[in-house]
Image (cartoon, rainbow, N blue to C red; front, side, top):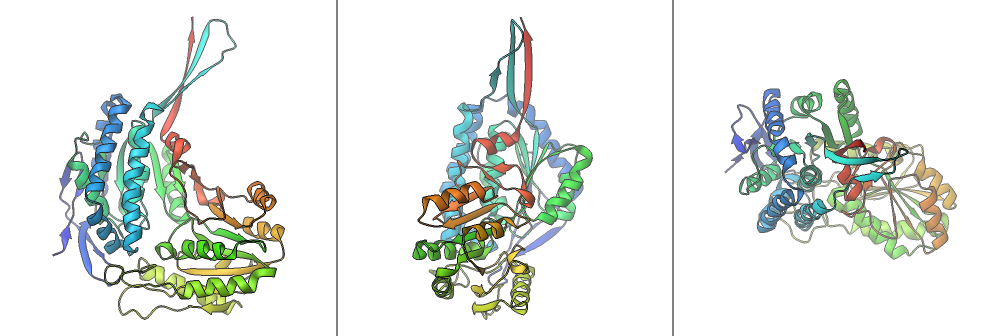
Length: 476
C-alpha cells in the first residue's frame, strides 16, 4: 500500500490538495505520495515558526537541549525502520543508511551539549567606567532546504544548531527523498516540542524553494545542493538581504605521492568514490598520482573498483553501492564518461550503464590518461567514476588541485611529514584529509571556498552561523 504523507505545520499534520509521487531508484517501485505545496502553505509554515520563536528563544537553552535529546532517543528507537525507508527512497546500501540514522541521533545529542557552552564576550573599553558586552542571539526563523543524498542527517545538521541557539525552523525536504523527513516529523510529534518550532513543507524547488527564499519572514536560508540552485537562492534572497549558509558541492582532489602506502590509498579512495554511489559532495572526485607509482596505483584501484558489488540494496545483501538517484543523474554520468573517452581518456574498467533490469545503475568506472582540460577533471561527476591524471611531483599536483572552481574537500597520501605539511599550507580547500578517507567529524567545521559555498556547518563555528551578535555599551 502506497503511503500518503502530509505537511507538518504548527504542530499538526495538514492535508494538501496536490501530490508528488516518490519511487525507489533501484527498481522503480512506487513508494509514496507527498504534498506538492503552494506558496500559501509555505507562508503558513513560516508564520507558525515566527509565532513560536520568541517563546522558544526565551526557553532556557538547557531545556531546549532536552527537546533535542528526546528526539534523538526517538530516532534510536526507530533506527531499523528509518534505515530501510532511507534505502528504499534514496538507494544507498542499508549499512550506510544505518550509519546515517545513528549519526543523526548522535548529532542531535552533540548539539544539545552546547546548551551550557553558548558564549558571548566581554570586551575591553577605551573609556573609564565603561563595559562592553557582546551577546549572541538567535536570528529568528530558519529555512532549511535539504538535498537528497544524505536526507535524514541533513535534517539534524540544520535543525539541531538552529533550535539550540533559539531559532525556529521550516524544513523543505528534497522531492526525491521526502519520506524520511515526514517520518522524522512523526517522531517530533510524539515529543513535547512546542508547536511551530519545527515545520515541514514539501514540494518542488520552483514552488516551495522559491517561496522560502523570497520570503521576508525568513532570517536565514541554510541550503545544501548544487551551485546553480545556490546561485538562484542568492538572487532570490537579495531583495531582503537574507543571511545565507550554502554548501554547494565539490570536486575533491586526491593526491597520491610516490612514497604513499598504496594499499591504504587505494582502499580509502575507492571507499570515498563508491560511497553512496559517488553521490557525495566531499568524496574523492579526481586523482593526481605521481608518475613513479602511477601504473601500480591504477592497476590496484581499477581492480578494487571492478570488484565493487552493486545492485538493489533491499533485494541483495553485502553490496558496496546502490543505484544513482534518478534517470537524469544516470544520463549525466554516462555522458561525462563518453565525453572523457572522446577527449582521449583511457577506459580502464566500467564505463557503461549497468544491465540490472530496473533502476538507475552505473558500473564503477576508472579513467586513466586524463588531463586538466577535460570536463571530467573539472566538473562534479556525482557518480561512481574515478578520473586519474599522472603528475611529476607534489608541486604539479597541488597546482592542478587548486585550479578548480570548487574548494570543499581534498586529500593527500604520503609517508612524508614535510609533504603533508606542505599540503596543509598550500592546498586551497576548506578541508584536507591526510592518509584517510574523506569524511568529516561533527565537531569540525565543514566549509568550502570559491563556489563550494558560503559559511559552513558543524562544531562551534557551524553553531554560531545560526546567531547574530548584539554589542551593548554600558557607561557607569
